[in-house]
Length: 353
Image (cartoon, rainbow, N blue to C red):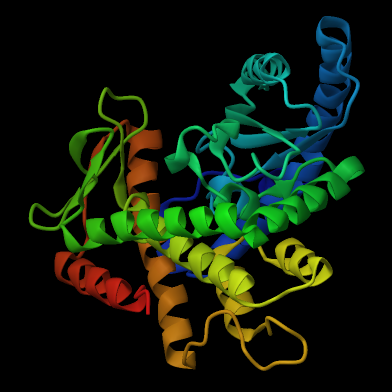
């Protein structure tokens, strides 16, 4: 496929994004081209190289599947220069040695002089481990099923493996104790990130108090590499919305007695982008024979939730752009009063009735 040079993905200024509110859709289209035009041959070669290394060094000859997640999976990056991809590699065997080999190999990969992957997570195709970040079930707070909900395949030859993983996650959701624990962790994390919206951007992480934004000073803080890493409005309104949608999704799946087939259909049909998630949860019937949807919201509130998420995503772009282009770790909030009002609005929408 030949793509005109002017169509190559690029880092868009957030001011360009807000001037043309829908232009991020063009970026999604270009990013999709980028995935298939540039990444697919890279992934295909990595798949073959990795298979050979694993077979020679560990004896592993099982399946490998490459996917992306996080902001990449949700189609939220402005351009490929912003940061390397987040990757998930699904494998059959539960073996830490294999996981370590994959992580080290992929983190060393470059393309055009730039790192391909910024973060690599190897997930074992085991229903009891899939919800946990890097399979760390002993650390209960590492339960992040959103990593699977947001996962998008990068490897067209074996996309069925990702659907299989999502189906396996359904077994955990339906399990009496493990599903209950997942729901509890989603709720707890949601409350933590929602409270940052209520506490002027401050939160406690890793035993220390951090300010990711400050409406009194009118600043947002962003630093990926500092001793104290900050993430602007990602830690607060954006993460809170993501967790709210995941919580409502999992709770509804658990409350209804779903067949394995219906459970898997929902999990494999659930969109990876936030706007798609909101539409799915507010319009899709949980059971074909009943009118109940996952998230019953009035049309006005549906629009508000989507608009507020985009509003704060724009502010995250401001912080990220200043950091990537100008190496600034703080940026001014353009309109403090509006920012505070929207924090209050999003907090009210994210109630756990």
